[in-house]
Image (cartoon, rainbow, N blue to C red; front, side, top):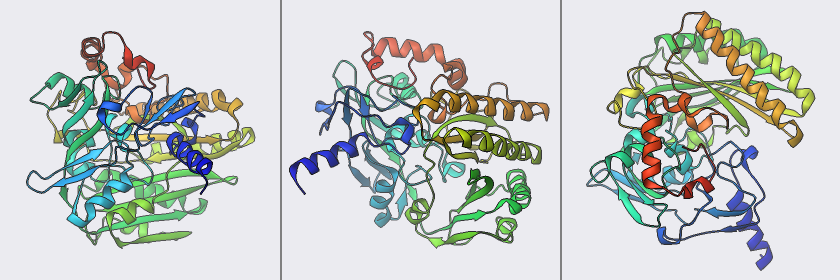
Length: 430
């Protein structure tokens, strides 16, 4: 490869995001190699889906050189560089038969995913990714490098767990690891005629399956003029017990890639949605809500396809209502309360033309509001349920994500960054 080709290749890697909506053409890119090299406007692994959150038209500082994965058997932890994607982490830990609580689909960046919370295939068993964090190496806005733990700085440790990039630049972190053997699962796809059966199976799973090793993502898609389903299934073991996924498996399918496999294989088989989104938090997925989601899929799919819409997608993600019990109350910026678990619901719209940005963003807001209204009308109490920051649309109010923690987070921000250096970066700002 020529020197120019090598430079262009590195530049493209540095500005690349898993979500095309948040990739911007930067004036140039820089790759620091140590915490002491780190400056501002930073992209870790590229998890952000909002424009400007980890991208810039100015100087893009890529964390790709922070690619460490070091397993410590004695402490049962792993030190992980923030420039990685989860695929790399899983591959590095697999020879040790251990794993961390990380992303569910291929290509997701470690940094933004973790600092915003982190929902995983292992969350039912171990909590959010931030619930498993032991330490963060942080370059403070002053330039000082600190190892932040619960013991060394409890307030800052609290803020880093869900408070995103407001307090400095995290260069690496230490997470707890857990034993990991083979898993079962993968992807099935279904055409429109199977949707009623898939909806019934999803509602039954949400209401009845309490095995923490089992998890699903049911995605309603609108592609090529009609709705369909992408069904991801996961079981943390070589075979699921009878009855957990039987309803899904007996439905006639379009494609099927489900087997006993390595964890990394399952993740790589899962499609990553390339889009910008809006998220709703629900208590449970009922038949009424799933009918409403299908209606939204068809309505917006039909309308937005005329405006360069290339992919309309609604992700149904049931979790156990105990997921927040894996860490103490008030132990992290997100979620603001842990007494009630929530099942996130994510809307992904993909489109081709920049001039359509506002139309699609407003459509996502309207669709989220409609789903929320249906849930409330059915009797779900959604008061106080926080929106997951990682996929919240760019203008989501802080109180919607952080609730009663906002005041404490603003005070922490003022003490750590009195001159607002981190205001130069993207993301939700305190």
